[in-house]
Length: 342
Image (cartoon, rainbow, N blue to C red; front, top):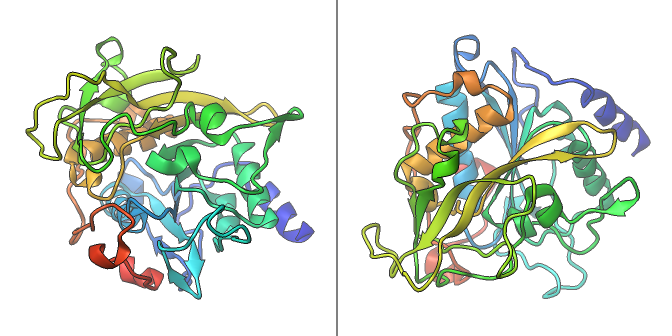
């Protein structure tokens, strides 16, 4: 444990822009080597994705995004999953449904070579050794992207302190946590509305039509607003059905669904953070949501100069995501080995 932690700390000391993929192939995770890295905006930077939730099919969405980044934009990508008996199992329970539950998340030691971390987790309880690896990343000053349920991504024994003060992952690191379904859960889709005051932000470059069948989250108490330091980019307007062209539900105000901020952990290094509360696998069928994500990756790495409206967000290979929800048998959700999602 001490040797592993020491190696991790040493590797976090500086970004790695590897010529070859920095993570060995292993049946427990997926690796995607960068294509034409030197000539692409990614330039071989290493993006680590963590898929560990039970409702929105992160196990389908994140490999798709990894294929996009690696094939079209020259990033090395690694996708890690929560596993049970060697298989990706989105049907695993969480606490308090199972008070003894711990989730197995092999490969977190490879955060040591990550230049950017993407989290799509929900109510995970991790072993102390894995928590230590995650917390070291949060102290590294390297960028972080949180998707949808990441703002309530951990529970149980998750603890992280900065200067002796306990940190809330959602509210403090990402800038908000799940406080309820503002839109109708599985009934009202979301239309993205650009915040005009921040329309010139690089993450919004080329973004025009954001739509997804998931509902709008409330991430701060009624009557309040996003915390200081958050810059709202998109508001989510609840619609009256799940259809793309549905009328807005004008009884419900539009709330922030995408924003940027910074995070400073122990040691004083400041990281760029992007959080989007959309992001189900079916949401990412929307090309402009994929563009928002690509722009956020480049912005997080301080590569705003590489963001252009013409950057491709065309899907790489087939992508037929399942519907969101917990009726696993009806939806066709079952355990598979990681290679199934490649």
